[in-house]
Length: 59
Image (cartoon, rainbow, N blue to C red):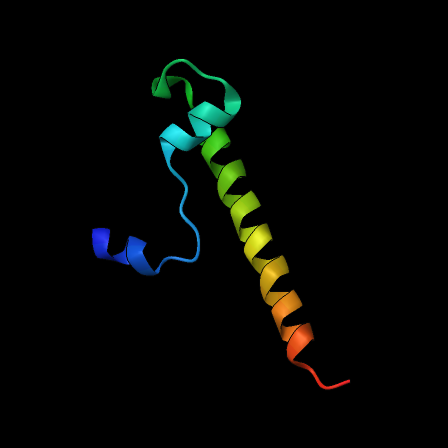
């Protein structure tokens, strides 16, 4: 499973989310917090991939 992180386009960790939200304990991170962070990462990837596709099109 860890090998997949090497080729992942995005990763989200509980520690990262806790830090962003200012939580003192990772146990304070909710499922909803994690889902929102995953959706943000997917949105970023989608935007980047669309920009790359647009840049590859001829003028």
